[in-house]
Image (cartoon, rainbow over all chains, first blue to last red; front, side):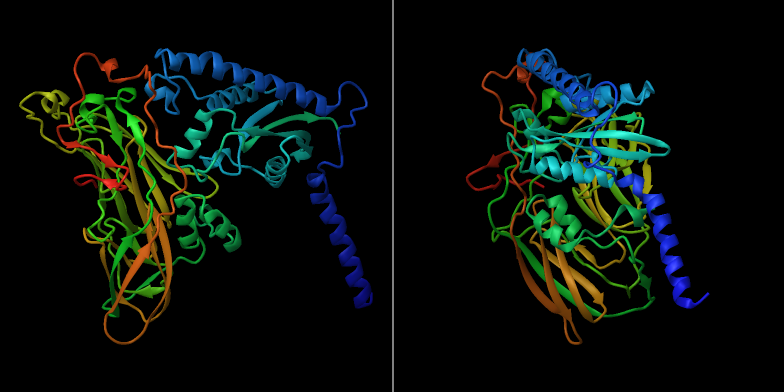
Length: 199
Length: 327
């Protein structure tokens, strides 16, 4: 086989291998939510997001704020050591972990491009792109599919805004915070919801 | 392990990040995770660099912590403002704004004088990390010692622009004969004795933060470097780096309040002397303000008050510096 034919063959094979290995991982917004049956994935994610948002808001206003205003209890990052209430963000993370441990496939968590702790940063390029996208356009969730092992997973990232002064203060005052100029209404990160789907 | 944890961020991105946080600034200046090996040459002699560091500009007010919301308010409140609040450490600037406690170091040195392997001792005493700021060479071991009569929950973090990474979490037990009541009695007969040490070997470059999970106001910093070309500024902001190999370097000044990078050329000749002015780069921090009707006021601890028998902290916002000392 002439050298140039060998080269073309090699390139073709490499291209096929490349798409086989990486093609499935990069399908993002373009492959939007065609379920065939039942609710669109985006609608399901919206419902879950609404519940998470409502729970956190109620926990903040009806538990944390009231307990603190009356001097009954405080909310603190070190809630375990200090016999305090978890911060609203921690509450969301804790409930997300609990749901994940049930093994049903649903995951949700808070993440940020400027997390106080590294574990709360983006874990892959999709999340990184999504957090940037909702930063620029908070009204539009960033959605798409990623591959995890043999599973196809639908992911939706919603902007998470600084809705209360306590959120802003905590991030701006925290010793380990990499961003301390947050203001009310800023996008502080995102709520990432994911669940497995049939391709 | 560290090589992957610590990557020098992209320069352009870091320029944007610079104004956001001193922690980011640390990263901009820090050495890369790749290629930080250092060759120690026994008997090496080189040039000397001395100078003074001054801080000029508006300093972000310190953080304040309501002592009654944390463990051991009476004991730890022996350093407080007398109204039940603890103020985070602020530097006591000299008459001409000289900055004590800043770390001055060269960014990249491949070989030169031998370093030290002696341990770096970090004490907790009166609910303060001592020293507040330190510098260490990779391979050195931190010896954490609790000299208080109470327990501390030590947490060590490596800072980065992707968020902090926990490196160590361990209880620091008090010496069994240290009694809190002895420090709080009228006679104040308490003695500080060290409890069992916790050791941690530092194996990569970075800026570390020490915290106590029981007392949030406790903080300590350490800059870890591959080489021994670093110095902590003294009371008058003075520093000295000895036996530097001739060459071009970035000289970094780092402090939680601000940082500065300066290009220098160390050539043959006598000792170099330089004065560096750094400006505070701390971003906005909302100092905690006491609510008008504070449900967690000092009355929570009963009839008595939290008496600052070790240090009465004062902060003069007009002069932007601690009054009557500080650390």
